[in-house]
Image (cartoon, rainbow, N blue to C red; front, side, top):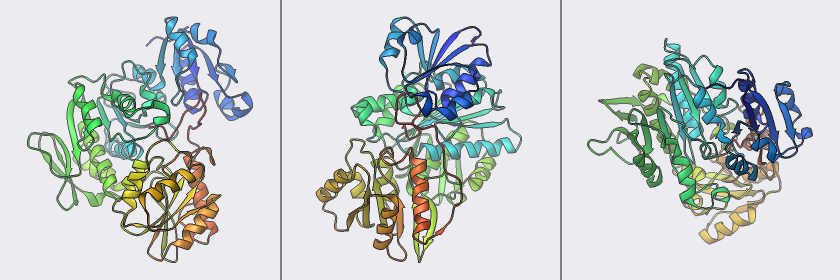
Length: 488
């Protein structure tokens, strides 16, 4: 892809925009970066940019869009009037992941993972399995995308961008909106449940964005889908990739290829050219939803060419991502779990369903417009109580009343108060879990800051804190012109 001398407008000066600007200018492009935020709010990003691009901050200029040769969108930026003007003027408008895809070695193996819930864990686990193959002598592995602080564009200058390299990326529906040819060798959509209706309006539109991950695949590629999710399955079947299913409900039907669990859930079974069995005990993550994530990851790694022994080695070395049902403290027999990445109802329902001990749940934040009924259904029989935080408190309380819950539902004005009240409700042997079912932007900059506030509060109530990691700084902002790490 020739970029020398081309005028490229990068929309969004979060981490992705900075990375895109560096990659483009290194290849001779004339880069301008635009962001709706003023310069005062972007000091660190401007410093990271290092003067390699022209800046247009505090708003967008239509003439910059229409006068560009190419417009590259950072993730999370909504549809803008300036984007429509650019298209009307014949300017191509593409996503950052589309640009990265065009610049990757066609002989590298691109794995793209999306879905409403579980995609971060699945992406990180897939990356760990591929890395185990790299450690054993295979080509290098890159793992990033919407996961953490490594946007896909950074894979372009990574050692994995070679024939046989593994490039594993979490992708969000926001990212797929402005793709035009994005073609992963292995694509997985884990599930599609109610989320982001504030952006998409209907589930049909939301599902259409998610399943674009399969859209440009050919019969030489692999499409992984959740057999229990009709929308995911329909999207995969409508595309041309070789269909592989994963199903936690029981064995696959004869002739179907994919992954399922043994009757006692002690093994993950892959059925492709032959049947392969992997002990679930290799994995340090718990819960049926995580076994589903693992099935998808094992399939993605296997279809990418990772040997069986590397899959087992990678699984044993894997550690959960921060803020994803991460045990962070204990006090008098009460365990504290940080699941701040549980930003929608389906994610919380999946983690609460069959939880191995009674739970006091801390939930709330910015409501996303869906029903909380599935969360209360999953909490039936396991909830000791609930503490609500943030703007969604009255909405969730009304849903609790409608569900007829028989446990205490308390309000808290801060994270510390929430942890104090949750600790008061819990008994020895119980768990206090932060799994908010909402976005964080009313009280926190992003889910990572929310999780760190929970950990600090756990320590403040006298619990033994099990982590001392610094706070996350994900590529996050709820405002146009920056990425949204909770996008799904």
